[in-house]
Each structure stands twice: as C-alpha cells, then as structure tokens.
Image (cartoon, rainbow, N blue to C red; front, side):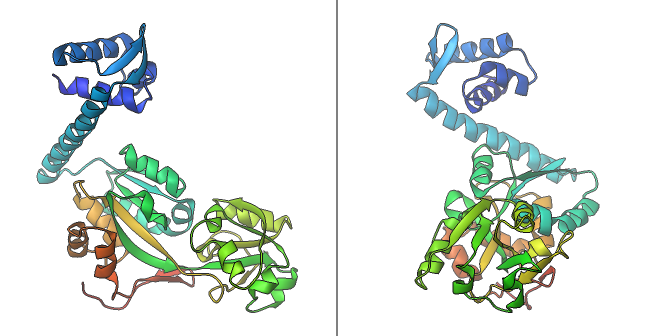
Length: 337
C-alpha cells in the first residue's frame, strides 16, 4: 500500500467518482490513476468501488470505511509535514480562509494587509461563500480557518471563538420618507417592501419572528447574500434595505441615508473557527490575534481543550467582546481568561 494510492482514492471519492476529474486534480492520467486504484483493491483483496463495466457506480460499504480511515491518514500526514516545517522555521507556504462576503469585503482587508506584511512569502487563499458553503469547504478540508456569523450548528467538529459584535442598520435614499426619522419603528418598516440578507429569514432572529412579536408582517421584496447587491436595489427604489452596519462604512454611500436599528434588531456575533483535531500553526495563532487581542495563544489553546460550544461560551461569557462602531472594530477593555 502506497501513500500515493491513498491520495488517488481520496481524490476519486471527492470528485464524486469522476476519475477523469480526479486525474486532472492530481496532474496524472486517467489510466494511471485507475491502475493504482485496482492495485490497491488487489492488495486489500476487496472491492472499494462498485462498477458497471469500467465505470465507477458507487463506493462499497467497506470502501466507505476505508475512505474514512484514509482521510485520517492523509490528515495526519499533512500535520507531520507542517510540524516539520514549523520546527525548521519555514512555516507553511499558504493559509486558506473561508469567510462571508461581509467579512471579506468590509472587515478583513486591513487585517490581511497587516498579516501579509508579517508573512510576506505566504500565499493567502480567501474563499467567500455563505455559511453553508463554508461548511462544505470545512468538510472537504479546503480551509484552515473559517470566519462567519451564526450558523454554528454547521460546524460541529470545529472550535468557534467569538470575535466581535455588530448590528444591522436600515438604509434608504435620502429622499425616502423614512430618512426623516431618527429611529423608525417596526410599524414604520412594515409600510414598505424590504430588501435584506437571505439569512434574515431563518432562525430565531428571523425578521418574520421579530415583526410577529409586534403583530406585524414584513413585506420582503428581495433577498441577497451580498450587501452591495442590497444597496444597489435600494438605489433602484425597490425597497428599504437592511444591511450590516459595516457595509455603509466602505465604498461610495453618500447617496444613502443610514438609520439606526439597534432598538429593533438583535446583535450578531462574528466568530473565527478552526478544526478541533487540526494542527494549529504559528501563522494561524498570529492571524487570530491580529483580529482581536482576546484571541491570544493562551485563550485559543484553552478553547481547544473545551468539550464543546457550551464550555467555550462559558469561557468567554464574562469577557466584553470588541464591537463594531464608527467604521471600525473597537477593542474591548482589558481582559483575562
């Protein structure tokens, strides 16, 4: 059994049994890959894949068990290689981060700039997506760190550390009737079609739930994952926008009026996560501490030892987290964990 064969097996399964696609990913030929898979099955004396002629049609029950073990072996192999690099002082040549559009567009640029100055030879990969898409990146082991808001249930095997708090706000053109109100009510908003994030329609903080508490029903005109898209349709006159407050502190927004909604809508908490079973490299510690002072190495290691989300929440419960305000994440007061 060769390590190369295990890589080939993993690639075939991840490519949904498309051998040609797996071969392209591994920069090899389809016949060479197929041959190694057959040799591995012959050595094991069992079929990993079900076939119809030369076509792979599925993975056998035994193949499922083998694939799970192979993933663990390949993961440990990567950890050993990374550990050796760390000990030699070379570090890894890349860092992959999965995050949402809001974080990538409005929060991370300065942090990434500082990090790049600290690690000028490191290749950064920034993958944007919804929480569900980031979760898929986690399952396929494409990212080292994840940054998102809410949806913690999608990351059961990751350590999720609270980073900072933020609120949504209301945005309308200056000539809109709501622009004259300092603090509009839910009843005021119920008079107009709303344009908001897709995630605003799900979970305990869904707009429908918030409005229903006041006996009201919101009129949702459009949803999107991208705040810039929401602002574009607000400008088109399609409705009243509800976006993250940081979305109005970057880019040209002088034509839009920003109205406070902290009295109406709940606070959100953005988190940074990493694999509970993964190897934390020095660059990962540094990146997290660049994000927030309370995410120092000691706190990260303590959180990694916690048994689950509830224990991590308790660990940070008495800590005043940073909060987004006036165009920046304001540091929290002095702390100790």
